[in-house]
Image 1 (cartoon, helix red, strand yellow):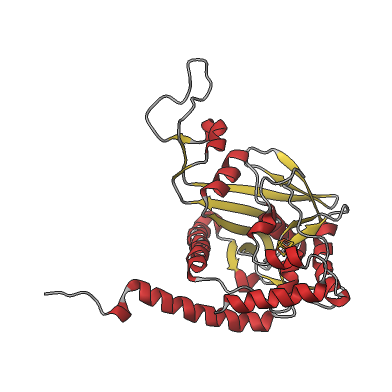
Image 2 (tube, rainbow, N blue to C red):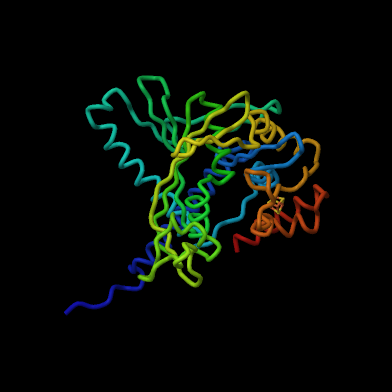
Length: 329
Ligand code: SF4
């Protein structure tokens, strides 16, 4: 006769113990990183003082060693990102093992670490996901992003445009390595999309058997469309200091992101710290400089700090410390 396993040996229990051990290890590494800026957290400041990408205020908090501790649910979410990277590494290793790619080697994370120093003598360190080398020469780098949310997947797939923060992160690595980079998305779900994406019916799959169109050719109302698993790659290019991305169909799209703006974003953070000042809040604009349909600040752990202490550096920092402390309980 078999019996149920002991409570200490269920899969969920062991996973949780693993999460806690991983978190302790992460916290230990993060303590060492305090005082440096991260390549994985990148943004851009435009000449109109609009901040794109990651928030400079969040980066300031991280520079001070302040971070909100993720809960177990968030950890499950993060694991999807690690799983995505592992899947890509496994496939690309196999690809480069083929005779036609014999002259290339694959390097990941620590092996292709990036480091540079701001004018405030603060190091910026980062690890691109993957880079292909020919001998000692980097040939191409990849930023690999897994998409977990159907809305994000539908936007990237249907509108054929990358997420701003992902694009800036890849662009930053491209600038600092001097190597071409691409941004690769993978969506592994199969879900009904929100109705506002139904206008992209030709890029989606009808989730029931009825015809998708009226006799006049218009999409029928009330139909549900499904987003199927996909991969999508955007190639990056700088032209006279301005970032463009190139879609798979070859169209080239200009962005408001510039080389100078990315460097300025990294300079801004130590400037804020040294001068005890908080720069304007994160911009709520997309890559076409249209206002986003949502307010990114409302999704931020430090929303309350910015709402209450918009421009008061010390009070803002105290509130952020409190938020981070409370997240550990
Ligand atoms: S609330 Fe907005 S401005 Fe404030 S830290 Fe968060 S993202 Fe940045």
